[in-house]
Image 1 (cartoon, helix red, strand yellow):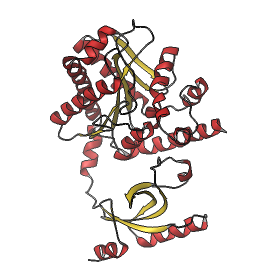
Image 2 (cartoon, one colour):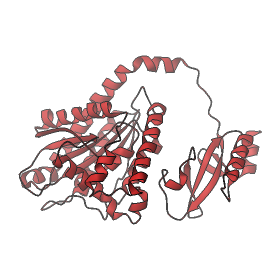
Image 3 (cartoon, one colour):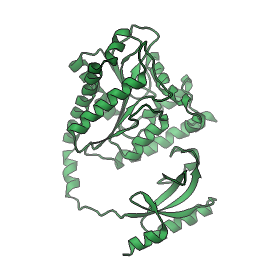
Image 4 (cartoon, one colour):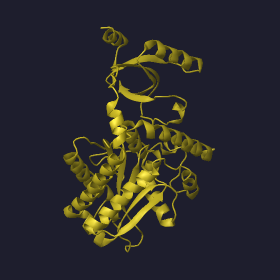
Length: 363
């Protein structure tokens, strides 16, 4: 049963990724998510004098600041900007809901031996060595810090070799772009700051499996290697690593937009369409604790969105500007057995009363 749930989840994600690959920006890089791994009660890898969560946060913020400073047209979204715990599934959710064009997850490595050193970058795929599998297991183990991980992750066990074989069934439609960007990051590490290049690799990382845009996971170096730990702890070392990530992003963005400039000309020639301000949706569920949008009870529903109201996380389906169409959807849900469903209105993603919505539309 557990395997069936996991396989069904993979098929669902493949469908979502295929759709969103075309719905997000296809001509420019305008949104970037930077994910500093671990945080809060999850320290990540531990060195003699360091914690992974602290180093990766410093590098993430520095890299993001460089991008924000040099590219006014790029919105940088951080999964965390302080020492807080963010669930693994929420990191992917943040990226997906923002409609980001690129995802960078930043981590530090560790090994039972103090000998290994150097930087490596991963994309979602099938591990080709036990070392790659162990890195994925270590990073995915963050889910054990979550109270309801068994439910949220469809029975996936980060310690099960068999589950990684199933996970490898998923092949991202963005894998070529992810590998391209990964190669640029590794080249910057090697050429600009003289880091040992451990290469671009593939493995089953849950956060990459769930994101719907080109994405990479960077391992900056080994905290288990004393010399490398010392470098990773220094301000200069963190500055160098952040600059290398920035340079790789700059190179990738320029190349990507150059290849897609003809598409940009076509899009610019199309008349601008006015987007209505008022949207009607059907509220169908409410919970005290937030659920992932791919929660199994939500499957089969389209355009699921969440908002907070009266201390609850409330979930809606549908997104119509015509109240008659949303009324038809309400009838369909009732016929399917949904109870306590009702119409809610939103203006600029803020809930308003139905009376106010009608007044706004018929002014």
